[in-house]
Length: 635
Image (cartoon, rainbow, N blue to C red; front, side, top):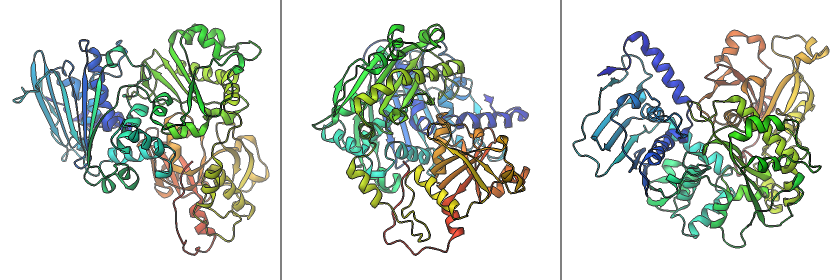
């Protein structure tokens, strides 16, 4: 046996590194994705033929089991406890053991069974999720030299991993929250619920929750490979879900999608979810599929009323078509792209459609993603080039590259390649995509007319007679309007504003008189005193921008939001300003009216948060109780 926490002097370092590793993984990956990824990689390395992967999710017991029929996990405990590299250079999704280690140390009970040509083994670990408790409370982490033989071996070659989370585990809570916020931001009123209903009516799925889970796994986990390898094209992934009381376990929104069923089974083939798949479930009249080339400058794409256009680019000549403007010119960086980027690109897949179609048929709407040999990352390009920014949400784009992932399998290791990819997409948008989108969809209209009318009048009343704004903020523009109305009433004399921009990476710039500053900072402004300010409906939603690298915490001085909400990433947590490092180390640098901070637990950086809902309670007398309260929903 090997004691993982011996010598004692190394134990704290091991625990700290393990916690950082777990925090680097997304909730859906810990919940089911990591073990599923290991099963997919195992099938890819198995002898050719049809294979199957069986997943069982029991929400009543918070237990997941995943079984594959590949060659079996090797009898090497080091791969499970320490992680290690038997996949380097094979273009697979991960490294044997790293993801399993994350799941193991997040679980109350973890069991792995394997049958290989060399024999069968079984190994169980209890209470591994207590690894970061005090030395006297930690379970024994003795690692065997080899796993013991399984007295009741699997019937055939393969691996079965079974793990259970505690009832109060943040893994499940964060997963449920992320699924709902990504796929159903307006709850059961979200447009995507109609696609879930269509999937059931078409006979593809037994319940709307089955469709939602499949769509989530195919859009946001390793099941959603943007390029499906030949070894996985015939692999059957079967999922069984059990839950006796869905509303109590998953909440009213997700629980309501169980459609009065407590157990159901369905299949979800490997492959990234795109509109070509989800529109196939729709009932007529469904959007028509086009494959029209964009042409130079995007000038060849005709306008349609009810359709979407899908094109794919693989060769260097094809990729240059995306960069050729209406005058037939290529960008200045073309030689760098030809030399350093095009050889790395496996393909670019571009879908152009109206915004309502994307929101109706894809969870979370359109996205621009980078994937590494099929595995989707969390990178997101900053689209700052091009004049028609309103068309950014009118295209869905996948750029798959031959590259390695980082340890958490969320980002590419090669940051220079990431920079080239972002530049490439910006140039493609400026040269062709913005024009093609404007021709194809016409004038952008994010909401149907009846939806717009209903969305305004159905909002909760703000119940503040002192204000001209009558409804609770619904999007960022409402938050900005509310803030500046309060400014006009003299409620924020410490702020002098120098610009708002929808095209900039960040919302606004202002000079702000901090708690420990004199009025000179406002009376004699200098550019160095400008602060970056972001606006959000709920402060917690900005963590999704951080995860996608759309925004950087260290760049933001102040976050103004209507209310706090919840962090969408375990890496970021809210703290009272009095409990923050800012208050401890630099209390004179606190901005006025700030009561909370959003802390990056990995870097220690803190973004100060000003909550308008709290300010209203401070500025005005309590409002009368609302007649029929409704919750506002993030845009």
